[in-house]
Amino acid sequence: MDHAINRRGMLGLLGGAMMAGSFADAAAGHARAPLQTPIGASALPPAWQAAEAVPLWQGRVAPGGTFHPAGRAADLAATFVTDVAAPELRVFRPQHGNGRALLVIPGGAYTFVSVRNEGVDVAARFTALGYTVFVLVYRLPGEGWTPRADVPLADAQRAMRQIRALAGTYGLDPAQVAAIGFSAGGHLAASLLTGYDEALFAPGDAIDRLDARPACGVLVYPVIAMEPPYTHAYSCSRLLGDHPDAALIARRSPARHVGAQTPPVMLAHAFDDPAVPWQNSTQFIEAMQAAHRPVEAHFFEEGGHGFGTGPANAPAGQWTNLAASWLDRQLG
Picture 1 (cartoon, rainbow, N blue to C red):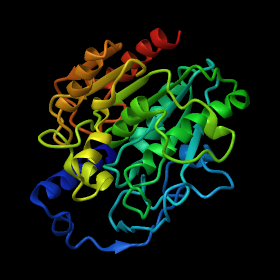
Picture 2 (tube, rainbow, N blue to C red):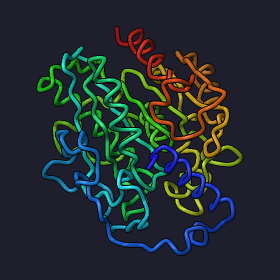
Picture 3 (cartoon, one colour):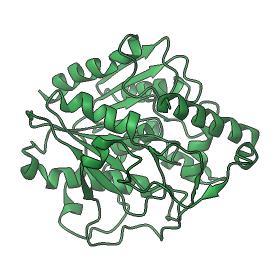
Picture 4 (tube, rainbow, N blue to C red):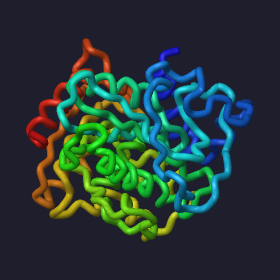
């Protein structure tokens, strides 16, 4: 199965169903069942199984309500992780480290976490360059957590702090930790870049008091808009609920929160993206420019959505090289 194509199809279905007002009708005939492939199960890539797992909230109850498994469509790809009761980081270590770390945040319409094309594949590219890569499996807002719009960001903040707490263990410079996010994970990364110091829960240990601000960030076909005409409607609904008020929409619209302390950002997007329009990226670019913050962007004629590291023989497949050069400038 081509997981990039499968993911594009799934996101197209989700977005189209929301615009029609009925995801349930669009998914009719897809039986729901308990999770068949929990994190670490044999159906997931061997590199994922072999990677060290670091729980985010060791020995603690994660802040934000109570987990209620949503189940999953029987034909959902095994690499689309759902039913996240215990969020974690998967650690991918380089053969020769450069002292830098990346927090990688896969997408999945806030409905699943796409751990292969936007996790394992990305880790392989950047560990080859010396980065220690931490792929985040974050809680999904429709699985019982409250307030639903805060839980993914709470996990992303904790992930940044956890990486810094482990810097000595992995031979990292805690000042050289960047974030990369894709699609809905790009929204989460953008929310982290602009809301790293947002108080979402009471500190429970020393890790919670560490800095959650990334040194810089890369946003790949990110969801930025939380209202029409450019938002991905299903991602928005899953994060905010079906009838969010104006204050909640504003609170979770990261372009509105770019300020003088927002870290440098690079964006990559394809003009033919059928799920998340490229104007999501230009919204963030305009906000960065208005705040006089460093920003770089790369737009591709072709690529669609969910291309992950991209095809090596097409321009969209060069974004990792562009990002590596940009990261060198920011972190060097």
